[in-house]
Image (tube, rainbow, N blue to C red; front, side, top):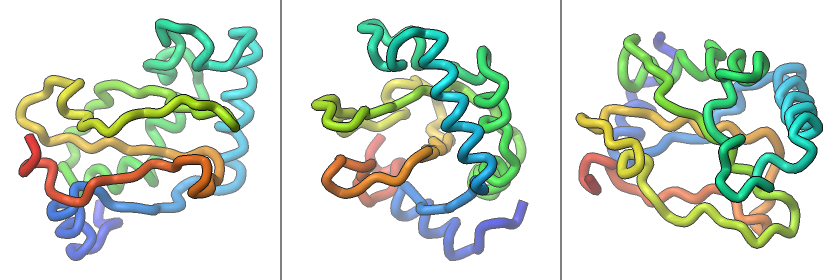
Length: 149
């Protein structure tokens, strides 16, 4: 604990998000990329190819590299700074947008889908590749999540 400054915690409480944090080293990032490639080879198709998306959720239950990512101390230390040490991984999902894909993840609030009360949660979004603005990277609406729920 103590990886975020008081100003960063205040910014998160005010804006509803905090980024970017380059938390994975080159070796960890490559292990994740290779893990995705192995998973898709096992599936025989891209992770998003299945219409009901059953292979997108909870990868940390199936894949050791995803479990390592979910327990990465660089990520969890920052989550702890925001919500304290009692951390539960409620869910995880691959949001993969292949090059030239028309797919989108529309504007949404994770808390709406989770159904958790109170709304004390953190979504740790981890990018495994660099994305240009043309590709449609993640965008955030500034404002406290508490004000929107």
